[in-house]
Amino acid sequence: MRKTERLAAMRFSSKTCVVTGGGSGIGRATCLRMGAEGGNVVVADLHQDAAQATADQIVSAGGRAIAAELDVGDSAQVQATIATAIATYGSLNVIVNDAAMMTFQPIVDVTEADFFAVMKTNMGSVFYFSKYGAPHMPPGSAIVNVSSVHAHETTANVVPYAASKGAIEAFTRGFSIEMEARKIRVNCVAPGAVDTPMLWNNPNVKSGAEKIEGAVGKPEELAAAICFIASDDASFINGTTLVADGGRLDIL
Image (cartoon, rainbow, N blue to C red):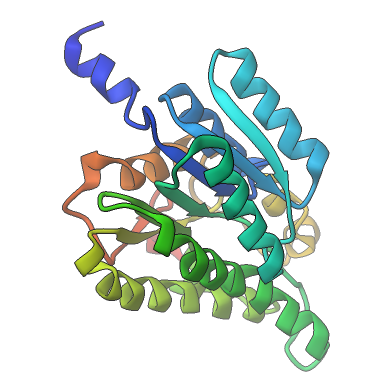
């Protein structure tokens, strides 16, 4: 392995990385890659067993990781997770906000409770981790929010999800400006169709109402994009959204 390859392979050495939704899909792939690249990984997920399985895989491969069970829409639990990360590893350098939920009904049928649950999980989690995480992050740190192509082009019956992802991108642009003086970068990655349970469990996809046209990405491909944006390789990228969709937007 050449020297440049060795350096690239350890982009997160000595950095503490909190990844929400780390028990499956894109979040899990991101945790595994950050662990392989030397990071101290905090695998945060609603399901403790899934988070622990990801953490165990990182540790068995020689990396460092702990599992953290939390509801990302709960402020107190977010703050506790941040405190655990700092207490365990002594720092907080990267936050990846990947956890999300969807509903699959027309707006006139969605309950108020379900609408605001989507907003609290998807957008609220970004707010909580930004508000309570950023004060502990040193210069050179990075926050990566995971959006969706639904923020740009969407379909019927997923309006709360699309709206939350659009809000995340607007939040990212504004918060990145606020963090410039602290030299903390804030960016967004917008995946297209990705081979995850969220895609295949979508009832619109199951029924055929939503056609999956074009490329379907692998979680590892999105993890590569997220890790790039989170690393010092992207030190001149701030306040932007990287669309990683295999060209899906071009056919929507």
